[in-house]
Amino acid sequence: MKIAVTGGTGYVGSLLVDALLARGDEVMVISRSGGQRQLKPRLQYLAWGQLAESPSSLEGFDAIVNLAGESINRRWNAAGKQAILQSRLDAAMAIEKAAAALKQKPRVVVNASGISIYGTDASRAHDEGSAVRGTDYLASVVEQWEAAADRIPAERLVKLRIGLVLGMKGGAFPKMLLPYRLFAGGRIGSGRQWIPWIHEDDMTRLILFCLDNPAIEGPVNACAPEPLTNDDFGRAVGAAAGRPHWLPLPAFVLKTALGELSFLLLEGSRAVPRKSVELGFSFRYPKASAAMRQLLGRE
Image (cartoon, rainbow, N blue to C red; front, side, top):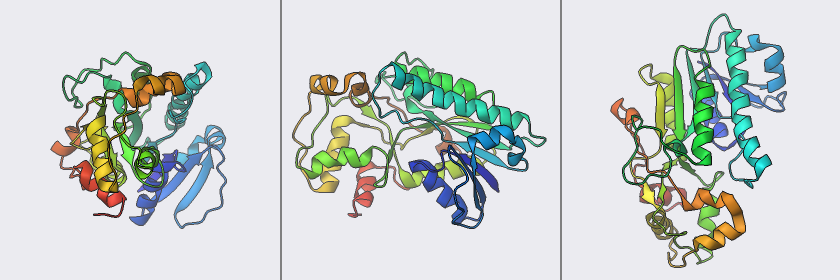
């Protein structure tokens, strides 16, 4: 397949690009800079500006994976919140315009999204058929993001609602692990907030599954079958790291230090993957304990 990947230089994007190349696909990474020196066969780079000037660069591509967007792990002041939202809308709109100009539309577009669209209702587990009732800032961002993705002309659109991706080379997990390595790990806030998570290997495999399986479209929850509360998640981290889970971090301390950004750690969405499992996807790491042991070399 010929596949374009936006955000292909980021954490999940770079893992995906390596997986695509390993199985023999041709890959074009669309990034801010583009024009990077080609270091691997079947890999090329394109800048967003070049795509806008020449949408035909994507002619003949089978698929587009859109992972572009500013990190949400930044200060949530007015400018930061606008950058988080606008970067996602701009990427989706740029792909929409490029795809609209193509004679042959992509067979599939996999657009990143977020589990936070379900809001913070912990009374039940949310699958892809659950109503979207989130009223917080992140839920609003994801709703607008998905609405922008819906306008991309493609034969099939997958909206990948991603949870916390666990890996040692990027993402939030190394920072979450640090307090335990310093013997200072414990629950955050009440500890009852939910964490939908997924191992980086399963994250990459799920994207490939979405690309290859013509039956899968619409929302897809990219999280393991076992969501955990913050307290249980921390206990699993401590057990895998051989460290105690004992020192709680009060909510008011986080709110004082991080302001509105503390929402990321003090609230969560309880979500489960139904659609991908029903269509035959098998998680290598359905349990957090096994996922963390693997990441810490203790499997």
